[in-house]
Image 1: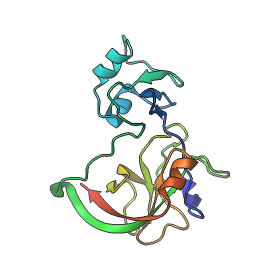
Image 2 (image 1 turned 45 degrees about the horizontal axis):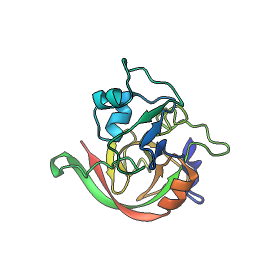
Image 3 (image 1 turned 60 degrees about the vertical axis):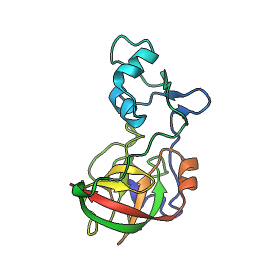
Image 4 (image 1 turned 30 degrees about the horizontal axis):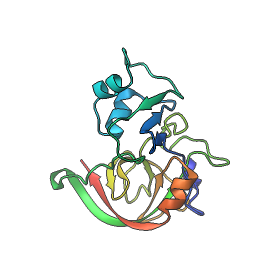
Length: 181
């Protein structure tokens, strides 16, 4: 389990593939046009048009134009509508990465984070948030409760971030969590 994680400092992650100055995205292993389009709230056809792509095939390290992105940060999903919320409460949130010494890169439910570094995943105490639950985390977006960790007990979560820099920036904060249907 990866969340032995860096809760010790709870502040490690992995860099976004977006570039603010040029509005580009560097494709990572496991990415798809659909996933990138959803992240940046554009359509697959827009991505294909902006990049002169004839098919949906992309490859790692390929640089894609993300023309209408105003910043390097992907858009965060809005909080869920109350009809989709099963439960809502506040938690202490820290951050971790799949790229730590001794980490397998696989979550407790089997997601390979090294192959999917931009996957939105949180580490939870399964007594508080059931593994596999879809959740909305304030300031992070919609994620899946896919991992556990020794220091994650009670109303604490660990959000997966792609770079150490991003994780350090996240720090430790109190956030609202919504468990979704």
